[in-house]
Image 1 (cartoon, rainbow, N blue to C red):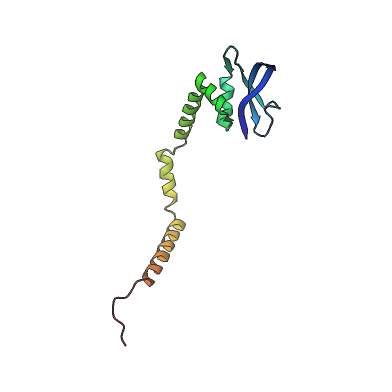
Image 2 (image 1 turned 180 degrees about the horizontal axis):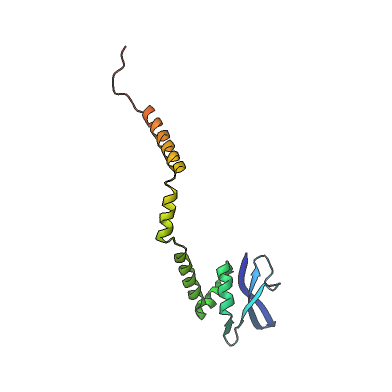
Length: 137
């Protein structure tokens, strides 16, 4: 799984972070797939490549909590959620496609299967009926 997280750089007591896309099994400061941005905590500067980040998020990359907070702060997370919601509404079938799907269900094979299922359901129901007439002795 690809994660978007921080990797530490800089001297002792002078941290500097890179925002990177990395395989979740790799070390914190190990090899990374893509460099997305940087964070300098001393002056509070955050630089993120918006286009690349959105591309990775749409492909399924999971951001860490800290990165998610940075993305919200920069407004990228909202754009990602908006693009995600519009993508799901685009996938809905239009009316013409629904009519075509129902037309396929009216074929001979479908009708035979439907009739067969109906007889199977009716047969056990008839055998489980309880007789109210008294038994003749």
